[in-house]
Image 1 (tube, rainbow, N blue to C red):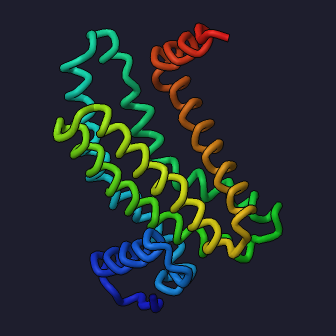
Image 2: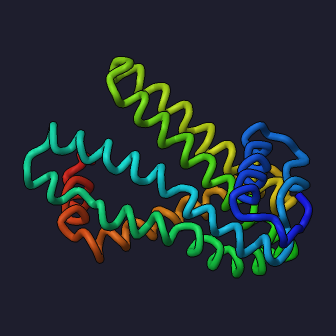
Image 3: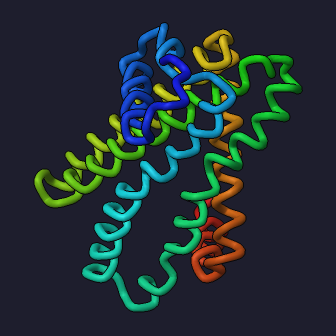
Length: 216
């Protein structure tokens, strides 16, 4: 994608999502379609705004399911606030930590392009997963079938596509990309647990109790 500062925001987002679609299709030349300029780096965080409709869709769907199937205490404890805060913090937090991680790994020259690709890929994947979650959770299929389909789709988008993005974005080997993927997933998990502790302590305590009562 050319660096055209005169392009309006809506076409810019469309072009960026089309570039992200190249990643989803595992195109090895995907990076050529992104705006990898310094301006493109900062604009890539518009991906957060692009994901907001998906957040609203999934939040309403999940909340309705909780209200219909859970006790008032469980409904009250569900970590909506933590999930919303995580939604807005995840991409900037990952970019911040990866700046130091890539420097440590001596691949910092590919840091900015990777962030651009990762942000737009995350937006596209989030929207796809949001729609699929609602469709498969709406009773169209049995719970078992829906669960299997969501697991397969989730693995492809949340694991395989992320791995491919790190591989081509950082221009590293597939084996090293697995290590980066694990690091980022642990980073996300650490962030959400911290947010549970701060914003939804009831839910955090429920998780800790469930973890501590697991059979050895």
